[in-house]
Image (tube, rainbow, N blue to C red):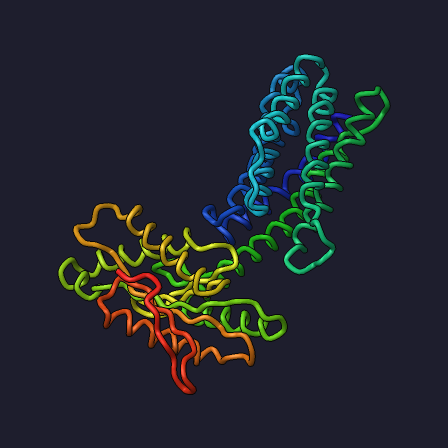
Amino acid sequence: MLTEIQEAFLSIWLCPLVMACCLSVGVGFAAGGMVFWNRAILWQVAAWPFLFVIKDPQLLALLTLPSIVLIALSARSMVLTIDHYLKEKTSRLALYFPFAAAVLPAFMLFTDVLERLAAAHLVFGLQALWIAMRLLPRTAVLSGRRWRWLGSLAFATTGVFLLIPAVLVLTDRPFSMTLAFQGWNVLTIIGTVAILLAHRDEAEQELKRLATRDILTGLLNRHAIFEAAHQKLREIKRQWSPLTLMLLDLDHFKQINDQHGHPMGDNVLRLIGEVLHDRLRPGDFVGRYGGEEFLLLIAGDAHAASLVDKRLREGLVSKNPGYPFKIDFSAGAVSLPPGPPVELDELVKRADTALYRAKAEGRGRLVMATEGPPGGSTFTALRPA
């Protein structure tokens, strides 16, 4: 049986070799999770010659150890690949236990080369089935999950291919381990297609993120925050709920740029972006409206807006890294009144007028616009400086 395996060397070894070369040229070595997958295939390329080229039985028995170690490293890299694309982190026990379980028993309990390989592949087969279970999507929706279905199929098939010959060899039944090695090729081919799909999905998500995010602050950009606002207003038309739109403007920002330079101004914008991101509640939205202005959608009424204003000012004080100036802002807000829907442009106009009043009254405060006489509004400083 060992001779049969060695005769199949080219068909088993060439597949990962060609795949590794193609991935190295086409994707490179610094492309997210693909680097782990390519590394897994390269470990296989390094492992198989130990088993297939050596003819001397004693030397082969000795070199089985590095071969199994390299295959274990390949399996570990595959787990790291799956962790990357699932955005999960496997525990160290789950990551290293199969490694030890494949290597140690194979050499402590068996002296025959085939039995050692079978013992190791028994562990690798169980690990492949475990990965297949992890990859199964929680829902049957195909969109964005095709790679998971395909990857689960690849690992499940490989697990079966590894387990069947391993069990038969260990139970002294005549069977060739060639099927197990062909199982690795199945994983190399189908698994690579699945990982390429995952890599494409990740790239598309990153492009979408870049298209909706402000590069400097990491918040939603103007287009994206307006889209979120329109969506929120459409939801409120179906079922009314309180909503407050707030415009926030950094005080004396031009002075900061003029006296301390534009890099310092950029640092201040990053700081307030971080505070806005950290201090808002789930269900609230924030985006960069333009320059040093930010637009917030707050799920709640004027009181909720006042609480948000307070948290933001406290956050700016606590996160200030020691800049030689005070970072503060003025804000104008307007709550969506019950009754007929109000257009977004009208809400922004009212909030902008309230912001202008906050600036005119001395800055560093929140002014709330409420409906007044027909065609007008009244303004209340909810949080005066």
